[in-house]
Image (cartoon, rainbow, N blue to C red; front, top):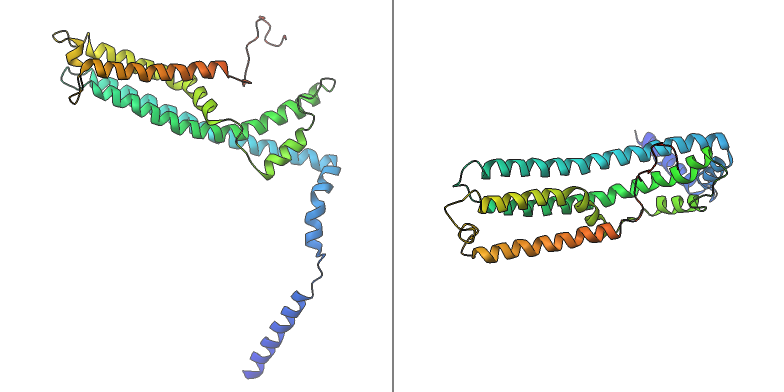
Length: 253
C-alpha cells in the first residue's frame, strides 16, 4: 500500500513537472491564434460560418421581438379589463383609468429596455443584409458601409446599444402606447362626463381630496408631455426598418 502511494505521488510529481515543462507556444494556443485567419482565407468555410452566424442572429432577433410583443399584449389586456370593469357600473371609481395610464407608462419603460436590446441584434442582421447579401445580388452597387466587417467584429468583441434611450422610448410610444393612452384618455373623459349625467365633471373628477379641475389639469399636462415625446420621435425617426413605395409596382424604385 505504501509503495502504491509512493508511486502515485511520484507519478503526480512527474505530471506536474510535465505540465510545467510545456512550451509557451502550445499547439492549442497557436491554433486559437490562426483559426480566424484560416476561416477568413477559406471561402467555403467562411460561407458556412456566415450562414450559421446569420441564422443565430435572426434567432436572437425573433426571441427579443416576441418579448416586445408580450409586453404589448399585457398592456392591451390590462386596458381592456379596466375599461370593462370601470364602465360596468356607475359606482366603480373612474380613477382606475388613471391608474391604467400609469401602468401603460410602466409597460412603456419595460418595452423601451427590451427594444434597445432587440435593436442590438437587429442592427447586426441589417448590416449583413445591406453589405453582404445585397452585394451578392447586386455587386455593382456601392456598399453602404465599406468597413462592415470591422464594424461587425468590433461589435462582437464589445456589444454596444445602438439606440439611445430617448429615441427608443419615443419609437415605442409612437407605435404602440400613444394610441393606447389616447383610448384611456377618451374613456376617462366619457366616464367623468357622459357616464355621470347627474353630476358636473368637476365633482366627478375629484379624487382623494384633490379638486376636479386640478385632476384634469394634471392629466392634461401629462398628455402634453407625452405628445411632445411623440413629436420628437417623428422628427428624429432616423433610418426605418421599412419604407413605402409610391409606385404600384412593389419592386420598382
